[in-house]
Image 1 (cartoon, rainbow over the protein chains, first blue to last red):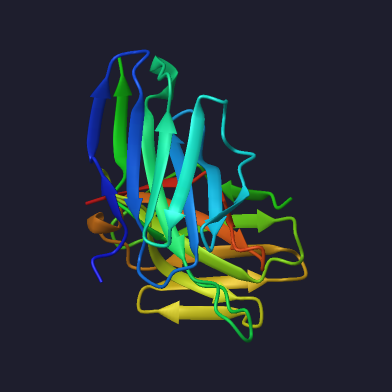
Image 2 (cartoon, helix red, strand yellow):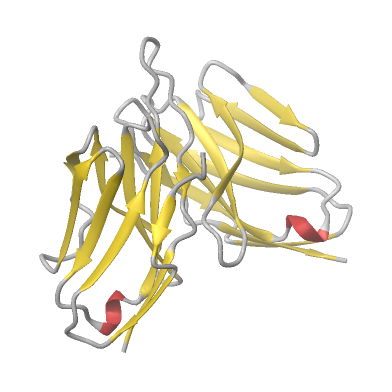
Length: 118
Length: 111
């Protein structure tokens, strides 16, 4: 497997524009997470999905942020309208919660999307 | 919810010395504790993990210890090398599926 794939790797956009970040999780994983990383706030969990259903979006900072997972192999994080304070690295991660003994497993992170809003 | 505290925030050691990073967690239901290493320009990558039914785990120069009673766990890196320089994150995870991360430790290994 190629791992978690995020696109684009870098995005520079003007304030007020819509930004869409994309993620392809590892095949077979049932959890997908969106994180934001900044120097000031570290690694923040924005939202996560289980079997394509949003479970907890309490980390989404504002209504300008939205996330979807239309199927098991694709998710998007959209910011509309974007603002300079949204500049950060956005990571997508996926993991598998094993069945039976409910064995937790690690989260596999993508390479991230570096977003700059000017 | 779970709260994870990680110390120190920065750590500088001489090559060959040991490095220790400590984390505490609050939720006794957490049962999985991974450690991630993040190099510049990359996403965090798992380096070692431990489950709540184990007290210690070792993988070459890296070891992790867990004290469930005290709710703390530590990462030990021996014989540090310059390529160990990175940001290290601890995390705690229960059966809800999501991990709670510490704030990270920036480790610098001086040659």
